[in-house]
View (tube, rainbow, N blue to C red):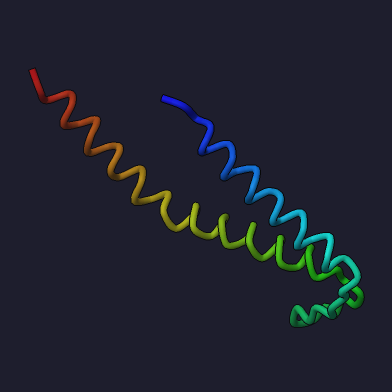
Length: 81
């Protein structure tokens, strides 16, 4: 089976992200993180950082459930003749 559609979709997504970062390179924002205030941060870095933190949070939240399901499947496989 051809993996071409997956590769084309990945390239299109990468091109869209690169275009977003390029066109918003001049946009600067101020981050207020409670005690810390950081001025002049590029918007593309803020959005990319937020996406990465979101992915990390979903990984941490789903890790316990994933390990439990893997353990159940391993136990089921060990019981089968």
